[in-house]
Each structure stands twice: as structure tokens, then as C-alpha cells.
Image (tube, rainbow, N blue to C red; front, side, top):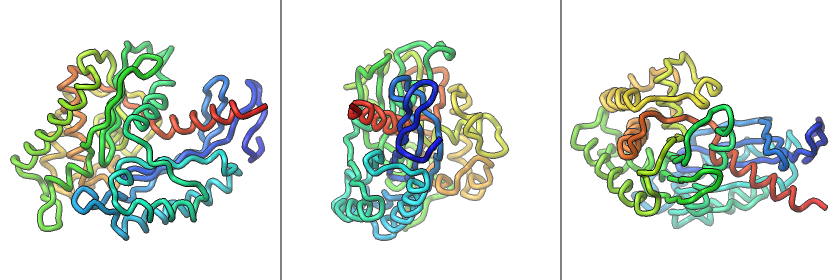
Length: 336
């Protein structure tokens, strides 16, 4: 296989693409070969860096200088990876989500990304974010999994959570401002430090925010129609890794695992009662999630309780894959 943007294979022509998803807590890269005709996606490089771009945005309305520099450092790394795989500039797409939608100084962020990657970040709406997440998460669920539809895909991010309902296509979607970073900063920080472990009244305040957001989501997405709950992003995959008792983070073991509501409830209670050191000692815990995982787990638990879901199907494929599919499909349409 060459390192160009397209290669000929037994099933036709694949398109080499790069997708970047820059959220409130992390920035992630996927370089993949995609067959637009079949939807087959082959990973070449998939990586994540915790950069906390949304640090303080809920309070100040601005992206902090140190958060921008952490994000730009990751962009420099990703630019090298993209170049090594020979992805042409017109096959690179950078999607920015909740934190950069909310920030007054988003232009500083845009200029920095353009200078490093040569592409302008697309600050997409919550509904667009939800649609990409749905596509990325559900393309691999047909056939052998034999799961009931409609699916409800929930993408629990740092600043927001996306709810998207559908069968083969999206029928309803809504983004609401509950995410693990936003809720932690809003309710679990005092005098500049995370309250550790949180008091009962602080946990109750998080739960109240989550429940109000679920009421808002339910006005657009019929949560009572859900047949299969699909969970995405780091809070969900971390809870799954804990439930599976993994000795280290294992993406293959976590992908399409099924975690019961009883397991989620037990793990959430344990995380909210633990100290920073106890959470950090969990084998699957990324250091950037130690302080925010309790809030993220509680979001997942309240969603399961609200929808009546007895289990969550965990997907490692998400908005990144959805972005990659969109780039490849656009490239396929552009060909003569």
C-alpha cells in the first residue's frame, strides 16, 4: 500500500483520510483508509491526548492560554503523523466541539490550528456532533450483534453530552451542556482545588443538573423509545474497563462490551467515594480523567436509569470514525 490518498484494493479504491476531534477534555486523531463503497475502515493511527482545552470556559467564557498551548502541542504532534502517512490536505478534517463553541477568544484557537495543520477547524453544532457520533458508533453494530433498534447513542464529553436516536439513520438528536469537565468545575471545585472525595450535597447538585439536562434532551429525543443504549467516549470506556477488571486499558476488550446498570451504579458509587490517589491507582484510568471520572460516570448512570436501559453497549468507535466516513464519502463523490 502506498502512502498517497487513495489505493486500489480487492474491493475497490480506498481513500486515506485524517480526522481530528478536539473536545473540551481531549484531542484525538484518526488516520485511516476508508472504502467509500463498502464503508470498510482500516485504522492506520488512532491516538488521544488530554489537553483540557475547556479549562475554566464555563466560568470565564474564554480559552485559557495554557490550555491553548497544550492543544497546540498536540496539533504539532498530529501534523507530523499526518505527514508521515501522506494524507493530502484536502483529506484532513478538524472538528472542534463544545469548548471552542463557547469561548469568546475562539479566533485565537482557529489561527493556531491553521498555522500548525493547514486546515481550519470546523466548530460544529451539537446536532452535527451527534450525527457524526451516531454514524461512527453504529456502522459496526449491524449483523452479528443483532441488537434491537432504535439505538440511543450517548456521547459523554467534557463539556456536553450528545443524545442521538435512530435506526439506519438519525431520527432525533440533541446536545446538552452536561459533561464530565463542566460538571466537575461547576460543583466539585472549591478554592481552586477539586473537593476530594465530594460531599453528598455536591453530588446531589451534579445529579440535579444531569436530571434537568435529561428533561431538556427528552423534549427533542424520545428517551422512552430506546431499545439499545450505546455509550461513547472516555467516561464510558473507563467505566467499562473497570467493570471488566482489566489490568490495563485494552481497546479491543472494551469495544462492544456490555456493562449492566448494576455494574455502572456500583462503580459510580465507588468512584464518587474514592480519593484522588485511589482513583489514580485504577489500572485503566488515564491520568487526565482522574478528577472528572466521577461526574462522567454519574452522567452515564442517570441516563441508564432514565431510559430504563439494563445495559450499555460500549463503543470505541465514535465521532472520529463518523468524521472519517464523511471525508471519504465526500472524496468519493468528487472523483470523476
